[in-house]
Amino acid sequence: MVVSGVLAIAVGALLIVLGSADDAAGRGAPQVGDGTGGVDLGLVGDGTFEAPVNVAFAPGQPTHTYVVEQRGTVQVLVNNDEAGTFLDVRHQTNGSGEQGLLGLAFHPNYVSNKLVYAYYTHAGTGDIVVSEFKAPNSLDANEASRREVIRIRHRFAGNHNGGQLLFGPDGFLYMATGDGGSAGDPGERAQDKRSLLGKLLRINPLNPPGARDYRSPKGNPFKGRRGRDAIFARGLRNPFRFSFDADTGRIAIGDVGQYDFEEIDYEGPRVLRGANFGWDRWEGFQRYTDSGSDVAKTPKAKHHDKPIHVYSHDQGCAVTGGVVVRDGSLTNLYGRYLYADHCEGTLRSFIPALDGATDDKPLDDSFGHPTSFTASPFDDRIYVTGFGVNGGAAVLGPED
Figure 1 (cartoon, rainbow, N blue to C red):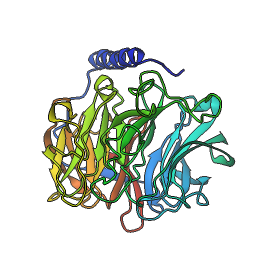
Figure 2: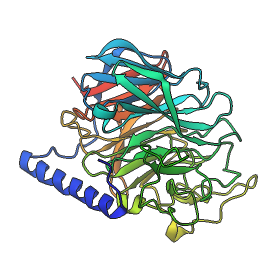
Figure 3: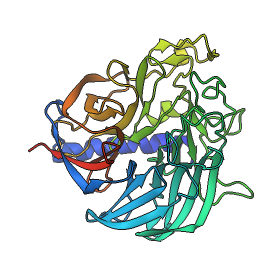
Figure 4: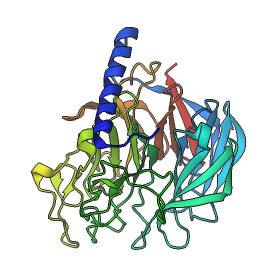
């Protein structure tokens, strides 16, 4: 059941934290890992897919793994054996560059309502689209059942489309959009409360009233105020991947930088509501300046929700946001935030905290052009996808 109201969200998140702490105390939670050593990269299926960008899981289907391919298809595996194409929207999208099918999310009540949501760029216009599909068969969605939930105009450039789609701990659908593309956000869309670009959005896709295709939940900061009521946070450049920590409910967002810095933002539910992550007045911790484009006048330093970790382009060029590891078998990574850079590929981790990250360090392993990290809701195992030579997907295990 979807929880409404910002107070309920905050209380729910607190109960998650307290409940996790009680459970951990009872069973003897693993120590936070030291981030050293490596991992075993086991193959998902035969390990090769066509430009895989994400992995998703369906409630009630612990044996099923869904691999999202940029070209517009989703492959389903059962007990790690490939079982065919689950969804095909190639007629709707154009999987090239930063465009294509970028995310997939099953509704928390999928067992009863059989609904799944896809995030893709529209083939004809470049617009960002999230569509709903009925999937009564866990091996084959019904493409003819497509209902467009939200469409966001994105016609200025082909890059910066965002792409992550997740149901949060509160049961609502979250999506992260890019700023519209080009460089320096010349349209100042990321700061514009009238634009859905450069934002973290939060919606309820079920039972929309009248002509609306979704509802904006109570507690969204601009609902009933000046601004678009689907906006939950703003000031993002290209937040390609974000995740929620299964134990704390906190969000971690990997936001791709411009010329100097990549950043990872990390917030709890209370601060996330109405947060302003700074782009394009800020890039990482520093003021962004570009004589070739306008620069936003907001936010001022005291209203800037700063990242907990940044790295320069000496280390990479495009952050692939990751996950906080809760797989107890990965003792070297437990409790750490695992991430990588799409250009450089080395798997890295740090200890996340609201006041800043500590102990950032590389593992002994890398993955070719990583595009996503996903934690299974069934066993906490971590899945990684990347473009590599042929395009790959792997599941992390303890180093032999």
